[in-house]
Length: 96
Image 1: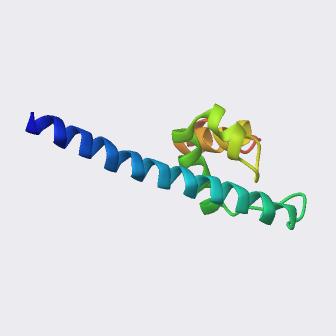
Image 2: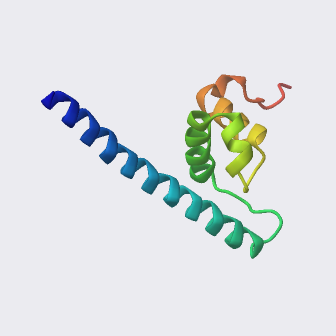
């Protein structure tokens, strides 16, 4: 019986943490939408910025990226990841 109390307590605490993370994500998504509305239509990103977004975007997956990505389309972000992880597939300079 004492184990059951620990399980319930753990479930309660993890539920609170999960709710807090969901609220933080909701806030950040709203804040990003608002800030994005004040930015120019197209932003130029540096390679380290693309790399950061590509690594996180790959872990998120295409479906989640469609909900949150504002700087670039999900296919573009995943393309950055492919270029980052497979540099030999990028276009090389034409040979003469």
